[in-house]
Image (cartoon, rainbow, N blue to C red; front, side, top):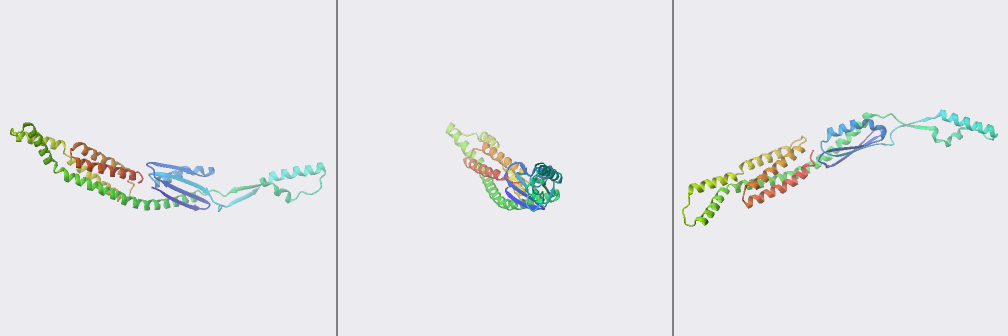
Length: 278
C-alpha cells in the first residue's frame, strides 16, 4: 500500500515513501558520511513493513549547528610568503586582517557531531506517519475485498444449489439417450441406476464446495486480523482458484461452469489487491 511520512530531528530530515509491491524492496539515500547507519535503517524499515517498495531519503537541514575553525598554519605560511615578497620587492603598504578576507580556504567549516539517536527517532516518526496513511488505505481496501468475497460466496452457494439437481438431470439425460438407442425395448433399471451412480460420483463436487466454503471463511477471518496476512491471503486466492477449476472440470452443466467463471474473475481481482496487503 502507498503512504508518505517525513520528520525532522536535530537537523536530520527523514522522508519515507511506500509504494505497492509484492515483495519487500528497500532503497536508502543519504549523505555518504551517514552510510554507517544504513544497516540499522534497513532493519527498522523491514521490521515495520513486510511488503512494499520503500524509499528512504535522509538529508540535513539548515538547523544543524556548524562550527568554524581557522586554518592558522596556512594563514601563517601565506602571511610570511607575502611579507617576504613585500620585502624583496620593496613594496609599500601593510599586511593587516583585511589581507586574509579574500582567502576563504583559511576558514574551515565542520558539521556538528552526528547524533544517531536523533536520526533514528526521525525515521521512526516518519514510519509512523506512513503506517497511518496505509491504515486509511487499508480500510478502504478491506471494504472492496469483502464485497468481492461476498460475490464469491454467493456464486459458491448458487453452485451448491444447482449441484443438487445434477443427479436428476443426469438420469433424465441418460434415459433419453438409452431410449433413443433401444426405442421400445424395456430398460434395465438396475443397470441404469448403476450408470447414474457412476456418473454422479464422477461429477461429485461436494468436497470442492466444502473446501471453497472453508477458504472463504478463512479469508474473511484473516481480513479482520491485525496481523500481517498478505501472503496467507495470496495463498488462499490460489486455493480458491484451484477448487473453482476442479469444479468446472468435473461437471457438465453450463450454469455451474458459468458460475465458476464468475468466481475466477472475482478471484483475479481479489488477488491483484491482495498483492498490496502487508
